Length: 456
Image (tube, rainbow, N blue to C red):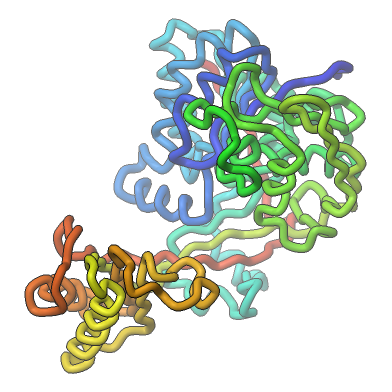
């Protein structure tokens, strides 16, 4: 058990985040753990498609070269990593990571913990046959309504298997679908030997994880309050949690980096995907966000305390993605004068042509970007002197054919519609598949996480 504070640094907030952030977190000052969050709901379906084409894929591939770059420093300074970069293929991710360690001459010095058990795709029929309908949490429909179109199905695991991997000496823990917060909570549970029913401390660790799960979003990025005065955002400092065994913690960042850690920036992040503030439900605990106390303790330091928690539920959330249909989005930019009226006229013409062709769409959405598309009626009437307006039209249908025909109808407006089209590039719009989200619940007794330790 660790009696002093530990420092957990956020290195990635999503798959595609700033690749320099993890390196800067490791090199910028002392840290004990590097937390890296890669997964979102749609990410799992993308990775499942990749694995279906190539069994060696299905994970965040940029994680491996990043770790190859960082492993010597991680090993030298004793920094340990928790990452859900394993996606739907944690084993392949771990194998690639071990090969990278060998290339860096670190054979025998890197242990990778592999957490699996979240992938339910091959178990869906078994689970439904045993009386688990996996009903949609929003509509109540059983999963059987879309079963033949399911692309991926993953249960959100909690912190416990990550804790086990750390307890067994893993240098890097690679997981599939675990909660974002669990990647931060697990190092605290491991370092401080917190019990699995210490609800107050588990809630504190969960809130810490929620605050830093989106990377620089809590340290100045995407921050609404005084956004134009936040310093040096070309060089943002990603957040670090300094945690103590009693459950209190401070959010900070490395000295000399840009961005800002303030009560306002932390508050904005707490509101992100919060839901009911009294019941932030995770597999580990239910945290009460109404009990959180924030206090500025100097420049770029916010103290967080007072967090209450309640026992976890008996269920895990399941994230199911399924094929829904097709969509396409096309754009044309109309220049002054009368930019808005030209764009409106083009939309009327396009819709009439689609109607005459007998094309039917589940939805057709038109936006006039630059004339109130973001704020709608709150923006008031568009000015007649707008210098330019982008006409953006999207269609959605269950079948591909009408969407494909739509993609051929918007470009002709350049020459046979209203005048002054500019900024058209990239050719015809592309038809894209729609992946829909199906949230469900499963009893925890049906899910058995597995932990394996492998060495380079």
